[in-house]
Image (cartoon, rainbow, N blue to C red; front, side, top):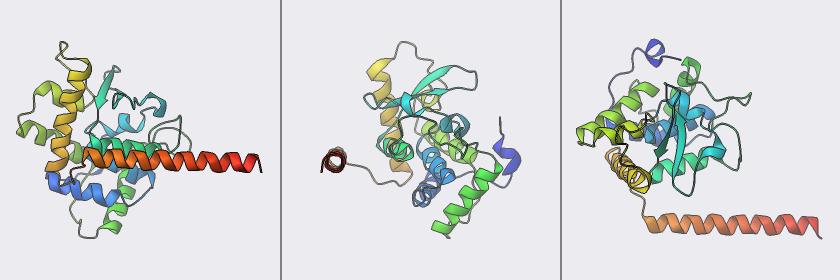
Length: 223
C-alpha cells in the first residue's frame, strides 16, 4: 500500500481549521484528486480504501457505507451531513463503479501524483493555502481532534473504517453515535452547520429536478 509519508515528508501537523480550508478549496473542482480530497476532509478513513468503495454499496437509507480495512475485513462507516454531500457529489448519477475512479475504471490511487495534483488544485483555488499537507496528515488531524474531544475510542475506530470494539453497540445506536461525532468535527473544522430543514429543501429541489428530467425524456420519446 502507498505510504504518503514517503512522498510528502514536508507535510506537518494540521489544525481542524486548516482541514476545513482544504475542504472548501477542493470543493471548487470536480477533478478526481480534488474529489478524493473533499472526501478525506470529512471522512477519516484511509484514502486508498475510501476511493475503492463501491457506489452500489452505499446505503442511502441508513447513511453509511462498507469499507475494507487493512486486515481485509469489511466495516460500516456512518457519515454526517457534510460527508453525505461529499459522497453524493462524488457518485453523481452513477449506479456502479468505484467511489473515486481512475481513467481506467479502477479506484484512484492516492499516490504521489494524485497528491501533487490535489495540492495544485487546492492552491489554485485558494493561493493563501501555502502550508504543506497530505492525505495522511488530514486523517491524523481529524482523528486527533476526535480524541481531544474525548470521543470514545470505539467511535473513532469505527469512523476510521477499522470496525468497532463495542460489539454490544450496533445498528441505529452505533450509527447515531458516529454521526454525532463527525458532525461536531465538521463544526470544529469551520464548516458551516447544515440545518436539517435545509437538507429537506435540497432533497425536494433534487426530486423536482429529477421529475422534470424524466418528463423531458418521455416527451422526446413521444412527440
